[in-house]
Amino acid sequence: MNRLAGKVALVTGAGRGIGAAIARAFVAEGAAVVLAELDLDTAQATAKDIAAAYANARVLAVKTDVTQSASVQSAVSEAERTFGPVDVLVNNAGINVFADPLTMTDDDWRRCFAVDLDGVWNGCRAVLPGMVERRAGSIVNIASTHAFQIIPGCFPYPVAKHGVIGLTRALGIEYAPKNVRVNAIAPGYIETQLTHDWWNAQPDPDAARRATLELPPMKRIGKPEEVAMTAVFLASDEAPFINASCITIDGGRTALHHE
Image (cartoon, rainbow, N blue to C red; front, side, top):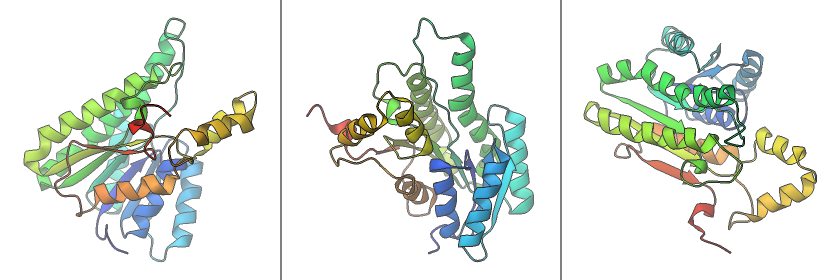
């Protein structure tokens, strides 16, 4: 399968979860992939697993702090030195910050936005000049269904994710004349380690898991690989007229008014 043959991709937060699944899917489709990850050990382990799974895999792990523009630019420069110009950027790195609005600290607010919104902008800003110059490129921002639906107790995470959608749409329109596409994916509940950690933190983990599985009309939650294949589509030449858009992956949950 070669839907991304010849392309160079950089994926932030690619050490585990959705990011790791995207990196793996991109390599499987022929791309050279840089795993830009704060936890370098995790990224290197994931890169090693991917390299073992695919012959002639071109994959590299680079320590990256998305909250620091210089760190992101350094990762892009490393990608260019190793594989060539970056054709695809996936801004996947993110953290959950859930707090009561009136008791949340200033540090929590800044930490949420530094990773979940500033980190996306830092990635876009690092790759856009090259993409504009070459008049080609695809940016995929991993948003969330929190970007358009609110769950009580999750502040300020949805505020940052609303910003990701705004950033996606604004940049998509700004650079459309340069043939650079900027899109987003909004996953709902996906079975990642973060989801398992949340279940395990509840008083009754099994009950919490069952309740989550009951939410989507399909009566299951998504898999990281299902998000990854949508990222492949948006990154590929199969989606040349999709721009400034967001694809929701939640098994139909956000379309459901009530049971």
